[in-house]
View 1 (cartoon, rainbow, N blue to C red):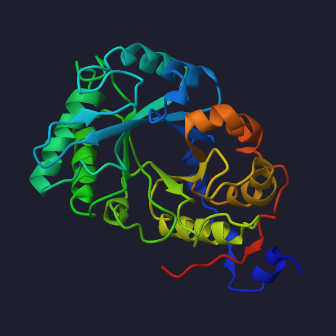
View 2: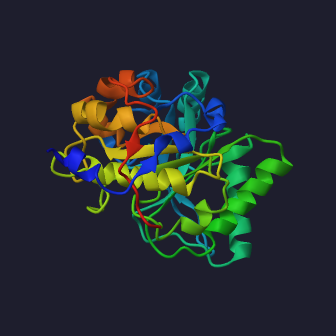
Amino acid sequence: MGSWERVSLSVVVTVLSLLTSSLAKKEKPGIAVYWGQNPGDGSLQDTCNSGNYKIVLMSYLKEFGCKRDPALDFDGHCGVGIRSCTRLRYEIQSCQRKGVKVLLALGGPTQSYSLCSSDDAQVIANYLYGNFLSGQEGPLGEVTLDGIHFDIQIGSDSYWDDLVNELQSIRHDNKNKFYLSAAPKCFLPDLYLDKAIKTGYFDYIFVEFYGIKTCQYSGGEAPELLKYWMAWTGYVEDYDTSLFLGLPAADEEGYVPPQNLIDDVLPYIIQTPSYGGIVLRDRAYDLITKYSKTVKPFIAQPSKQWPVSLRSPFSVPI
């Protein structure tokens, strides 16, 4: 008896009970990718021209909050500082003309960002809207990015929910459609973004199934990853959000070989109601491994079909 069969004798959760009419509202599944933290990424325009991605996460606005001067860092793709990347405007607009959404990622692994108060969250929300989401002149030129991505990896969970609420108020008041997304770790609840997620305002949640052994793919086995995917599916079932499976695009911790993803993971997660696709870190590694090109044909249509009435063994207490 294989590991799949052994695990399937445990706690049962019915996938059918999670399939709801909200599926009709979801976009077609696709692939998102991080761009901007590796010189090997290539240009933003070439990234979008590849045809492999529906969303590009420009990384990062690495300094902001608590009276810091905001600072972008795209690791050599443009100059250092807040006013040195206006030439990216043309590449961003080229991506958008091709139907690729471009979001600005906040945070990352640096120690140079945080929020000090609810008022601070309001200040940053207004800064983000005025400089990146409104079409006014800003650090990337006169652009209207498609949204803001929260990639909070340090500090605390304080006031990120306030920032989400402020951005939600802005898009409601201005009737300006832009997207909000988050990148929590796979283990629930997320240390930094749980309160923000519970606002219910994230359109996309890019769950990172790497860097935490408890819930990542390991040793050629998928059950741990899948049971935490099911936990996330239940966690966001009351929100109008799309879940993406976050994976490294190269052979490092949490890596799922493309054929294993196609055979052992996608046929299952595609049938869950919040499924939106996968997100890869990062473009530079994907250029080398051609991961996105290999798996793209199966992102929306699995290589084999699990019965919709399949009873899943995957349940995680939250």
